[in-house]
Length: 169
Length: 101
Image (cartoon, rainbow over all chains, first blue to last red; front, side):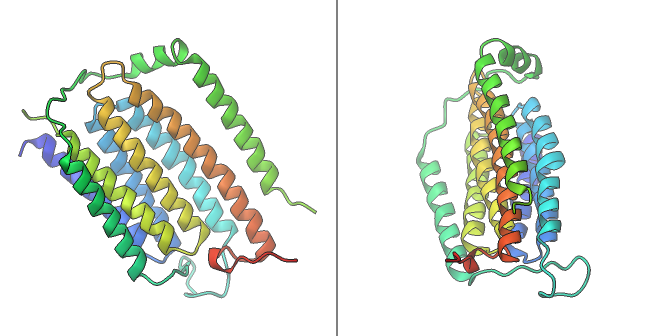
């Protein structure tokens, strides 16, 4: 048990535990908070996989962008007169729990079974240093075309989203 | 050998994926379902990053960054659709959506 493995296990506990809280809770605001913890744990896992650029951009995009979007969505689709009457008690409905949890467990055990049969023995760590410079140079040279395309895609998606969300007559 | 074995990352990704999949099946609220989809997307991304660790060209890392952007686009459009559906039906329960003839 090296410190690296211990910190990995702690981060997995945070990530998967918060994901399970998201699955378990019916309060949508609690789920948003749990999603915040999940994203935090995932960023830590990326750091442990030597992908520091990915960790930082994941934090900025998910905690700063997607989570705020989700909170706006929750705010704008708040259904009154349902469940708890307290201010932050936004209780949602769900189907019966047995089948989805059973299927999820089946998917998990199937994936773990398949992954355990694989042979990942000879894989070595290529480069444990920071990859910031590498990613910056690659995005502007070798991957310049996909980078521009993904920028245009983002622009189209944002314009489309504002058009869809506008009040149509 | 004090590195983290890659299969541990894959197991964590499997756990996240299964959780997201169950959320997709379990929840009726559309925003909850979107959160489940995000979890599944991030589980796939974690696998990419875990394998990119042992690739000198870091292709998994770069693909992961693009996947991140695609996930954000999906979320923005999907939430706009959810808001529009709320205007139409006054609720966002996926089981109760009915077409109006």
